[in-house]
Image (tube, rainbow over all chains, first blue to last red; front, side, top):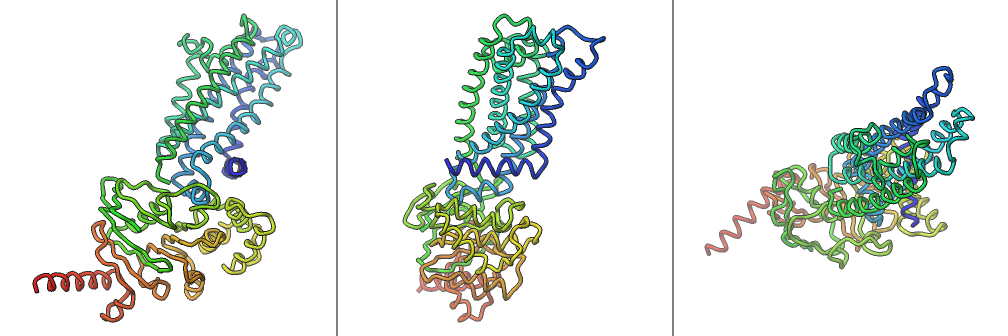
Length: 242
Length: 243
């Protein structure tokens, strides 16, 4: 456990030192900006469902970016020798993967929480009253879980590919899984328990029939997917050259 | 002990069946005709790179284990650039290395202080190590590798940025039972640090000898000198077979 905490701490510091942490948090905060700006112009206000949709689209982009950064980071850790330095000091390879996962989970939380609060606070009072706060919180939590699945996918690619290639593939894969759901062309991805369904629920919260149940289903599926992908990533890391 | 170790990198067979037996306490210089072959061998021994074929046994174990008190504390590996995060300060690197080695707080501090003194890390220990330049990175890397007082030390092109005589002093690792393998593309720089030489030619051990034997033949400690010794040995073997 102490080794996991040590690796996660190093990963967070590495993200901070290289400005990647700032980029990720800024990306998540920027996702809230269109919704917040829309609310600041009440005369041109869109319907309530329209207010949250840009937030969901922005989050899909930010989460895909996080997957790309996760892939690039772990791959750079492998090729740069720092993963090797840890492994030669009794840190299991699986703990290196888990440590990076924990770091990205924390970063996602740091970015997503203020972003979600900002969107909530900028909603006009009448509209905020029309949304169930518990449903909103559940949808945001499920979006975080979808982000964890995207990060796990990024880490899996990071154990196999070169840094830039891994980052690009993870960015594209994350975008391909999340964006079509919120933009509408692929209905299968938008149906619970698909991980991307969390973003669809968030974008269309007022119209959602069972926002909490759908979010819980989607969030649970995301966590299960993240777990399965992480097991795969740990197994791939076990065979990787460091 | 290494038996039949094989490994290719990008379709180049760098190790084509390495068989090697290194006695406890030996200081071995590994030189190869193909760049990267010696480093690859050390990477495999350190448990960082997988071999395609063959096996090896070090410190009484057949493979690297992740236990704090086992293989990892007994075998140290130093890559050319130190290997750690360069934004960590020397103090943090040593503290982290001691923590990961499982030492308690008091023992950690004692060992960190000892390493700072032994490896001339100076007093400016709270700045990122990279600000001290490549020499500082490499010295901190060596200090971190040695903090657990390992039995086997694998050094890949060690301390290239540190000048002699400081380099020779730092690499004169104490301990009569400490085994050391140095992979080097500049054998002459390792004079005085090693007592045995191994030449890898086309991925196989072409010669394994004491450095004294080189001197007896009047050959220099260089790739050419070691290759000449390998040819002399080969000729002698052929002559004996004919006789």
